[in-house]
Length: 134
Image (cartoon, rainbow, N blue to C red; front, top):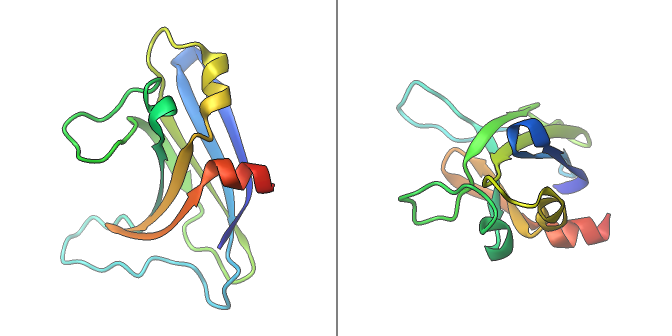
């Protein structure tokens, strides 16, 4: 898998940082969820952005977790990515009130993209490195 495009948008009216990401499946088999469990509410593939310290200090964070997690405001994806094809993902996070939004735009890639299949980490990408390579 490779990230082929990443765009960040600040939604000023709602104080939200949005990531739009395209991921290409470079494997010969479809990229789909393999996670199975006895529950009924199947979540499958998920992307999350884990902020580094500078970005985390400007974002609303989930309290009571051992992980640094920004408060999500919405997300979506194409789900399965066929071999040789691209899939689109987006995710939105809440910015702290009073934060300079221009600073958020500069810090948005001070983070790591994590692809999850259920509770299992499939792949991690440094967004700073990805942005420099694109």
